[in-house]
Image 1 (spheres, helix red, strand yellow):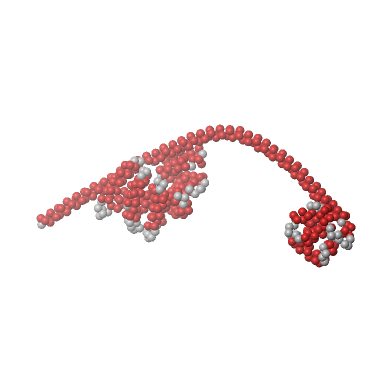
Image 2 (cartoon, helix red, strand yellow):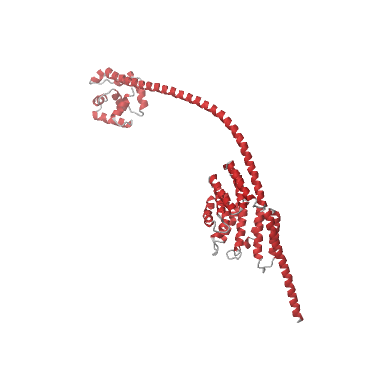
Length: 460
C-alpha cells in the first residue's frame, strides 16, 4: 500500500515537472515568435532573425509527442528563412532550407500541415528571386513540382505562388518561353485564390515582359494597374514597391508630370506602411531627386546643344547647297560631253560605213577585169592583201585555227565572188565549195550565210 502511494507520488511529481517544463518551452517559442514578428515589422532584421532562430531551436527540443511540435517548427523555419532573405543573409536562408529539406517534403501530399509546407517553400523560392538567386529558385521550384506530381489531393492552385516566383526567375535568366508557359495558370487563378489577385498577376506580367523586349509603355501600364489595385486592396507595401520600380527602372520613359503623379500616389500609401517601407519611400524620393536633377542638367545641356546644332545645321545646309550646285553643274557638263560624244560616235559610224562602201567599190572596180575573165590569176589574193595590208592580220585575229583553204574561202567572200566563180578560183566543184563554206560558217560560230558575209566584210 505504501509502495503504491510512493509510485503515484513520483509519477504525479514527474508529470507536474514535465508539464511545467513543456509549458516553459512552449512559452519561450511563442515569446520568440511574437518578438520576431514585432522586430521584423519594425525593420530590425537582425533581432528578428535571432528570435526566430531561438524559436526554431526550442521546437527541435520539444518531445515528439507534443502535438504542436511540427506546426511550431514549420512556422519558425518559415519566418527565419523569410527574414534572413530580406535581411541580406540569403546564405542563412539557403542553409536552413537545405538542412531541413527532407523534413519539409516528408509526406507533403497527405500532411495535415500541407498548407504550412507549401507556404514555406513559396517563401523560400520568393526570397531566392528577391536576392537574384534565380537558379536556386528554379531548382527549388522544379524539385517541388516533381515532388507533388503524383499527389492525388494536390490542386494547381496550390502551385500558384511558387509558379509566379518561378516565372520571374525564368524571365531573369532569359528563359522567356518557360516564363510565358506559366502565365496561363496564373491568369486562370487570379482573384480566385486567397493569396493571388489581379494586382499580383499584373506585377508578374510586367516583370516577365520587361525581359522579353516588350515596349516600356506596355510594361509601365501593367505596373500602374498593379499598383492601383494594391492600393485599393490596402496592400500599401506592395504598391510602394512598384512605385519604386517605376521610378528607378522606367524614369526615362516617364515625363516630369508622370513622375510627380507617382510621388503623389505614393504619399497616399506611405503613412500606412511600416518602418521598413518608410525607408523604401526615402530611397524612392532620393532616386526621384537624382532623376529630376539629371533632367534639369540635361535640359540645360540640350539648350546649348540646340543652339550649337542650329549653327552647325546652317553651315551644313550652306555646304550641301554648294555641293548640290557643283553636282548640278557637273551633271550639265557631263550631259553636254555625252551629247558631243554621241554625235561623234554617230559620225564615226557613218564614216565607217562610207569607208566600207569605198572599199567594196574599190574591190569591184579594181578587180572587175580579173573577175570578168574566165581564167583566174593565181596572185589575185596577194593583190588583195597588197591593197589592204591589215587584212591578213585581221583575219588571223578574228578567226583562229583556220586552214589555208578556209582563208581562201574568206578571200572569195571579200571579193564578192559567186559560188561558181569561187569554185573555179579554188579549183573546186560548186558542191564542194558549198560544203566547205557551210563548214566554215559553223566553225566560226555564225548562224547564217548573211551573218557570215556581213562579218567578213568588216575585216576590210
